[in-house]
Image 1 (cartoon, one colour):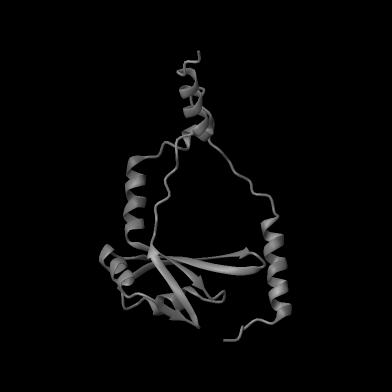
Image 2 (image 1 turned 90 degrees about the horizontal axis):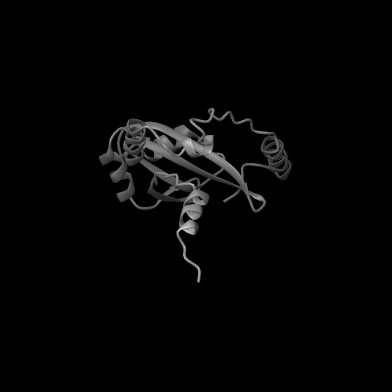
Length: 157
């Protein structure tokens, strides 16, 4: 298996990724609500939005060990036997001096996602893909507030 990128092209890509990752990110938080910090209000989510996200996640899979040059259409072709695909999202990150790619594939229904998991290993451009069910990220309760409340109820002798 040979790489489609020359060393010069890889170095240029790494440089571009480094430049991009060093740019500041501007996050606009919502104003505080009745004395509660905005970080605490972000934890409380709209139940309907959460249900919609959970439903989309149940129709999605996580794919890793992708070739860095893979395209959404390439993944769509690889998984077309599973069912209709709504969306393919590919991410690339630098890890230990090399590029790593992974993707989320959202299917039209849960059965298609389950079918894609049952196929086992798939190979794309010489890479054996690792396929698993997409996990739903759940935000945890703010730890410092839980620690503060538990420390006030402790008895010391």
